[in-house]
Length: 416
Image (tube, rainbow, N blue to C red):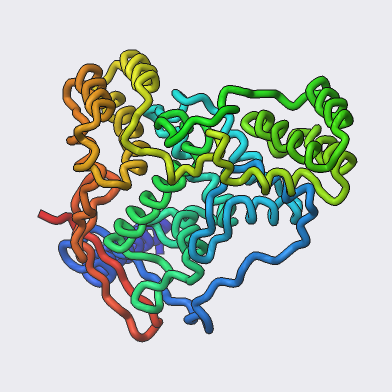
């Protein structure tokens, strides 16, 4: 047989093979009319749906003191409080969570609101660190949801997510609802972190404290002065009162990983045997005479500080495009609405609420406060069999359970 004939036969075989593969993909692996399909094999069902808690470690008192300088964000379901988990991780050898929260707390008030969502991304990373999910591969739970978000919700809830009781990866409609749930969690955490840090002055506190205007940096000079002054106290009650007042002034600027914190703790212990930094910080928790110690949940949500609205307005005037203006004011309202727990309708008459609405209308004529609020409260409208993909297309989802694998095939096609 001639060489040219051999080549012709090989080409014909390749053509037949290609056409066979095409028809297989078109008429067998992908049903007619569908754009793509993919198979998912269900792993063995876990013996228990409960997640194992993180390993326990012994937390030294100094680490507890450092964690107490973080915001007091409470435990939620299976997730411990921010302070408790930060202390556990620090004792286990990682201070990434403490550093991330400290960095967020160091931002200025106007940094909270950026059209690029930078600050919310910081809080999102803090939630991953808190849940221990920051190293989870993004696409390890399927292509329709960030696996870190799903793993974080699992850690908070204390149980594995299994769709239909078998499948760890959500289909598109389920992922839409799960992502919406994570976004709502993110809003709450953003609010709690912001209101105990750079946004603490967005609202007028329910009461002003006598010492609210005092701020002292912890440095060599201030520490030496405190040590010298404590030495002039002759009785234990006087020394205790002195160190409480000292920490009231230091605490707003005190950083958990400040290298002078151990020296501060040692100075307190030398002055008050049997007590340390942890003990004094515990005494200050919820203090009625310090505006900084007002719990974020007791802040009057209706009274926007007027000077803060002025700052927001000035920054809004520098934003040029309508899309960026919308993103900016949406971030402002997203934070504010977390404080509207008493009910939106009860607060619309507040003159400062109206001032915020006026600022939005003047700097973003296509928006207003109620429109943004309504948009943020819109329920997820995706039906059980439809979802909107990353390109904005509405897709029909068909799930076929395959008993022989066991597993399922998920197919997608454009919805009319």
